[in-house]
Image: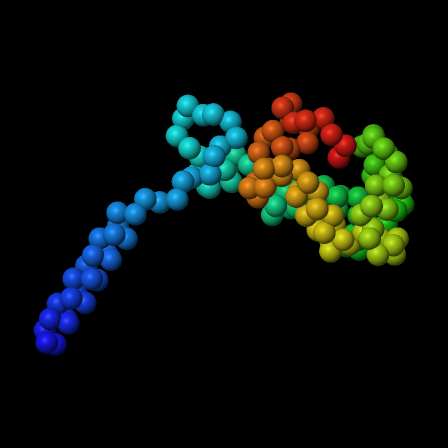
Length: 147
């Protein structure tokens, strides 16, 4: 009787293993644009796209060039001078106010990171965590939108 039970359990385990191996995998997510080449892998997307970490690092580096006194934060005066020097569009006071969430008159790394994370999420229209060329501001195929 015990041999029969062991045999039935072993047969059941083999059947379960065989079924698990022949089960079809879930379908891959649909691509937004038809492609004639092989589908892009996650590492390909990272190479051709911009992750949140890379986006923050690039923007932070550019933003912190405004920190002329090297105190690790940017004041409104520094920001205004920086924006004027680079002939930026828009009112520097308004753009500074959007980033300075605690309204202390300075933008530190924490405030900048929070602002950039929100901006990244808004730009990442397909929600894949990577900004493709068409999602990046300034790219010729990017939609014309307020930045």
